[in-house]
Image (cartoon, rainbow, N blue to C red):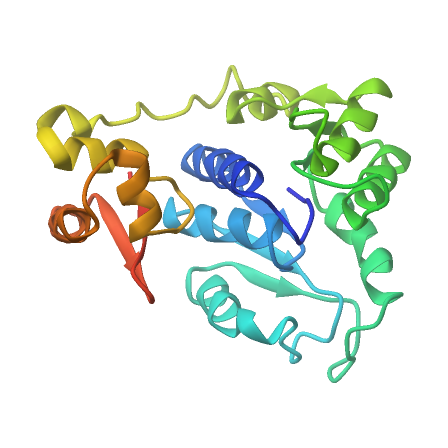
Length: 247
């Protein structure tokens, strides 16, 4: 699963949702360890209790971007892997990432492009996939947005539509062998403001103030409600009052 580093909320939520559901279905998520779509896919796979592999454009001992040290540590501790063809100590360079993209696609049963501009590493990965005979899928988006240019071009050239994890499972031949687990509905047990807050939580972190606005709840009330949801195991808090859905 690949896409732009400068992902918008729609892109990160779609990547997280599909990666989460695929991981729940037993699929290992492969991506490039970069910011944006890659990070959302890695993170969601681990939240679902699944495994994920990051193919790096540096040596495995080099953390790039530097902010992903905790993410890479979690990938390893959750049973995943960091993979690179480069020697230890190899630093990030413009040429190292396009070259590693052939490994991302080569390790995959299908490549899903979530958000990408007209010229992006994600399209480079899709190109490698086609040369390797790996199916390519793309997530549709608003054609007026820059992030939709790449997926739209792929769809025009024959890529399959990826609107959900089930589209990916069908493409890789697992729809008849592996079904997605039933999704629990804990929201049915919630009432009032807690139900409203849970209803707007996503599988990518959102700030408490943003959640409050979306749910129509005062900020102070939203924060206390989110803490109650956290105690129930329905959401997870990240530093800076960011919250994300756990189920």
